[in-house]
Length: 251
Image 1 (cartoon, rainbow, N blue to C red):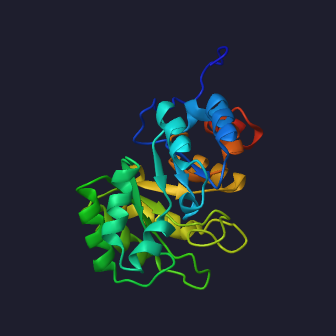
Image 2: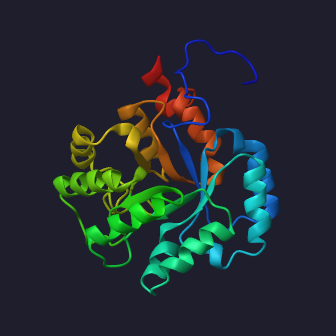
């Protein structure tokens, strides 16, 4: 930090198991990645190349190299996994992870229909190769799971080998754990936290009010995902209580 402010919340230091900031890269250029790393790399724990953008991203090798040199793990979005699974390309997907020397993979079923038992088998298989992050919840706004179902799915995926489970919200923040207005489904979150350890969950929270809500609920070291590159430093100030939205919360 550039100077001292007393009595701020303690932030877990990198590499972190909690307090994670996962950033969504939806198509940054190499120059934009360099600028992002210069400004916000120190506060970023991992980067997701959103959905299947890695398929069409120019200079993918160079982009991954930039993140690697900055010490920021990268993984491909879960929709890529789904796109290959539905086409019978699981082995191709595994080879893809090796080709790009990725240490993480996301397993999701937000756009395809597979049994949860089958999803857990994919998690177990991939966990032998990489660190697995699995996503719970549908991208379909019409599919609303009861709290007990979220808990059941999360528990099973952690037992199958997931390092973290992601609570689905999409990059827009209006499905899954949120209503279509972006408002948090508070009862759902409270119920989940009675059964699933907070350290095991990454809450997708692309909107500032969502970030504020989770910081006030869990604390400065809540793990948040789908953060826009330009929002990383603003989020860090929210975590530390040096922005008006959380200012009084940490005094």
